[in-house]
Length: 296
Image (cartoon, rainbow, N blue to C red; front, side, top):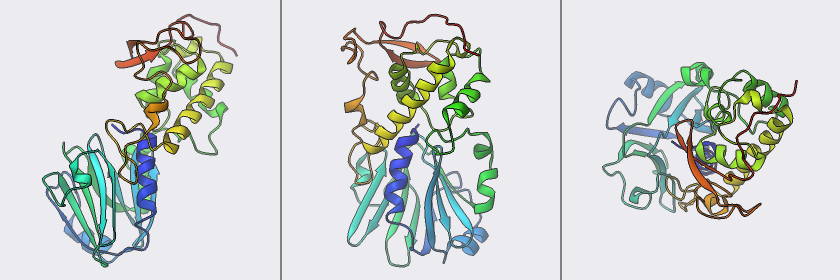
């Protein structure tokens, strides 16, 4: 599943292309991918203008002049491809659909704009979806109600971060970072990278991490997320950036997928183990598993 930087990369590309375009038609292959009534599509999508493209956690939101929004979850293999007479944009799962003729066998939803340009939602595994909802109701859908705060939001502080993690004192620090109800959009790659930056073993229980260490972890998490957005995501395998190029973040990764290589800080050999049900990369010298008194 994409993490926050990958979805933000998609959002950035769409935000530069879609605003001002008017929806003229839409086709889809199944109700699973496009679970919307014909009446709602006619009344609130067709003839409406795109006003903004936003993101909440790992979900894209295309806001419309009708006060409705298209809410898009790419899941594991989704991609968005925009095609115009003078431009082509592709972002998402890096298969040939990004550059091939569309629609193809992976196309689930095809939007046509009044100027003749098109937007395709492709999804090989058919797990993703595009829902048309009143914009005012988007924050109330189950996913939005359960998801935690944005880690890069200007109003979200190290104090807020620490307080939210403290509610899960008996869980491992990595499991809590991966819990979308605690913090939005953080996945395996960025959990490993930020824990390495803070010199915390991923299996350490939250209760055994000091407040000072949690503040350091928050700083490291923001750093790796911002770096990944700058580099176009971690997309060597599952995502490409707004120009259809693979994200370059993993070439700058300090620990993730570097098992058998030297730690860039202390030159110990990075190892891979399993924590919170996920493959986990650590420096065994600097990320030791030991209980510490929790600062109060």
